[in-house]
Image 1 (cartoon, rainbow, N blue to C red):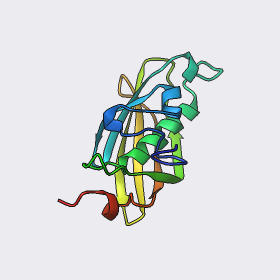
Image 2: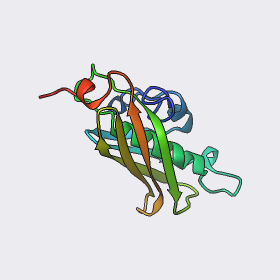
Image 3: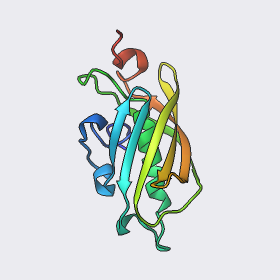
Image 4: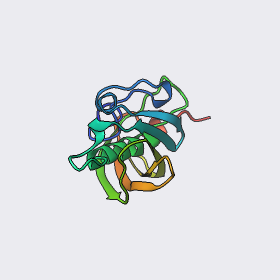
Length: 154
């Protein structure tokens, strides 16, 4: 979901839990519906603007959703005043199914996290639960966003 949560990948959105989105997310029309430590869920209702010339969901839409969700999975902070950001270092996407319409849902989980780098994985499924694509990414927290810098220590 590029810009604020990553200038190459974490997302152009502000706080997924607030529903505030901007940039590419707004253009594509998807939003994050759940956000917690290490996990994010997003949804998109497919329309003709999301389809390729063959009439099926464009792979770029799937890649964007995987990128944004994977980035967001490592950016949660319980303190709304502590906004975290990242950039995408690498992204791998595997396409496994097709869609022509309906609701699709991306779910991403943070898998690892060090001082500056974290990895996440994501799956995109249709309403029937069929896997359309999956992927994983490597991200770098931007200054002040790393695990020890941005997450409140309780």
